[in-house]
Amino acid sequence: MARMPTENTYLYWLILACEVGFWLLLGAALFFRYVFRLERVSWVLLVLLPVLDLLLLAFTAVDLRSGQTATFAHGLATAYVGFTVAFGGLAVGWADQRFAHWFANGPPPTRPPKSGWAAVRHELGLWIRCIVAAAIICILVAGLIVLVDNDVATQHLREWFRVAIGAVFFWFVFGPAWSAVFHWRVRA
Image (cartoon, rainbow, N blue to C red; front, side, top):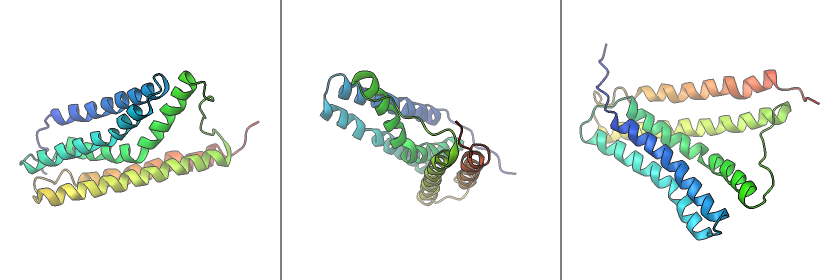
């Protein structure tokens, strides 16, 4: 059985910093848009959101290319990027609705449907985003494997193919399938 490589915590801290940075940039962008009415500043800050993903991905690639053996953290970085790309727009929309409501007298935020076929359709939409995230993860993992070109160093990175496919399966079971079985009736 292959030994798990020694984990370096700096990559976990970088992933956490990207997540914190995402919400800080998003909050700042919306704050500038709705409180100060500075649309251009808001737009620039929103454009910077994908830059965080690119920086994380670049650091991960450089780390692996420099001879570091792939660890769980390297795969987690690809998962973070995949889910940020697939679900980032929803997070921005979710936050935008709340800021508009709180600071610009916008309508109350919409809530996802809780029952009926509308809830099932909503869950199917989220599951499709999960498929997109899994595809991005697989593409990024494959790209890192090709970039490093060392089967031993990337052995643990290959496990992320199964993680991505498993996420799609379990998301379907506990998302659309669960909703179809337990929330299909329209409640009065």
